[in-house]
Image (tube, rainbow, N blue to C red):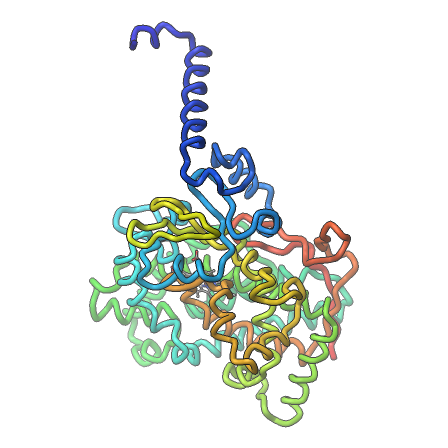
Length: 478
Ligand code: HEM
């Protein structure tokens, strides 16, 4: 046999390998116990269909479209399924159900043995230990300490918008909201901004730039901690200072690689997501003038009656019901993550969706974009931006029920640890901007239209995050 193979030319060998591969995937597809699950033909045989669909940059829309065609489940790749089922969400993401993150998350792993980013870790035990180490830094009580950092960045964003308003310039909203989100998370994490708002521009270099910057800040903070100014050390409220204090007491508890991982995670997971959500919020306010006016009235009335300070505190912002409904609706309408959040079906807890029992080892996930367009949960107007729906759910006592399918921050044990931080950033910046400026979308903004010609949102580009582009607008002082 070996002699036969070695006698083949390179072309013949390649043809043989291709033939064996095609035979293998065809037999696997025929014998697949879930062959009745619908989906694109190619996706039965290869992951390439899924990879290509993601590469095109608008998978979230494709996912909605295909669910409309096939219902609650379709195959994205062999052994991998996209699900749209509120009952399944509890099983897939519920605490203690044993559904771990799928191998897809390896793409986000940090190099190095024994280390794993909190976001990508597939080991539930190690993940729980690491999450516990830092969860208090994201708690509501810790947030008060981060408010001055947010205030500083709001002040800078206000200065940039004043300059743009006075120059009568057209500007890209997404860009400035991105600068804001990066600088806030920089200041919260390291007590130091990236400086994007100071310059009005961000820096090229992606993850490499962030990793370098993080290392520099950790080194600087460690030096500072060794310095004589102990009183400053004790009052500094930033994230890294708190971690260093824990490390000093117990170096085993927070290792150097923990420090690096936790700080970079804040930047990587917390900046684009917040900028995307804020862009969604400002875009929808401008496209739904009634909602804009209602929010403006709520803020102006609260300011007139002295119910909000300048700058507004997080506590005061939480007491503005329409503002909170607008934030939630912006998160619902344009979730930051645009792919199904895939988990592996465990032996102990299989799942049945639309009559299909999915075997252990398969990958299943729900895409927040699909969930949030589900009309049986969010009503026939699910595709509309209507903040009032959140106030109605509350009145009807249905909040708990709806929350089960609100997936902007994920769900269960892997739910977003930075949720409160992002709500702090959003809740403060929106009223501050609206009481100072008037925003108008420009006709040159790039928008998505559906098959009927209806505008459905801003043009976006997605791989994992669904990032808006061409969000051009104007700002005037009020
Ligand atoms: C509006 C802003 C944000 C959105 C929409 C968002 C969304 C999400 C989602 C959907 C997940 C779960 C992903 C999955 O299951 O695959 C997640 C996890 C995570 N997020 Fe956020 N996020 C936001 C802000 C932040 C901020 C500000 C931080 C940090 C300060 C942060 C840090 C993390 C971390 C560390 C995880 C992994 C948690 C774990 O696996 O235990 N996020 N986020």
